[in-house]
Structures are given as C-alpha cells and as structure tokens.
Image (cartoon, rainbow, N blue to C red; front, top):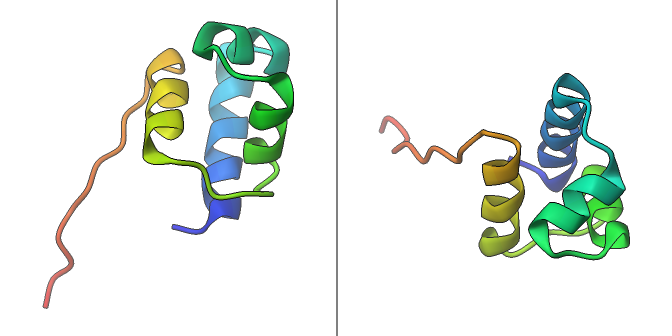
Length: 68
C-alpha cells in the first residue's frame, strides 16, 4: 500500500464518521498537521501512529501473506 492509498483510506473513514482533522488529532494525541499530512499522503508514518488513528476510526490493519 502506498502512503497516498493509506491517506485516501483515512480520509474516507474520517468522512464516514464525520470526524475532523482537529478532533482526530486530539483523540490520538497528535498535532493536527500530522493528521493532515498523513491524509494527503505527504509522509510515511510509523505503524504506531497508523494504529492509533485506525483505532479511533474503528478500523484495523490486516496483514496477509502474498500467495506465491
């Protein structure tokens, strides 16, 4: 998954739940700029940050093995 794809997913989840950047940042103890930049795919966050955000958005990361 690219950082842009992750940002699009987070943006869609935020819209579905009607949560603003400022509100999500506050819930995750992050700067609003961090959430904004992540949503726009401007940086690759640490897994801990993604986990915090997805937890607040009632979503999760699922890792699957590639079929070989």
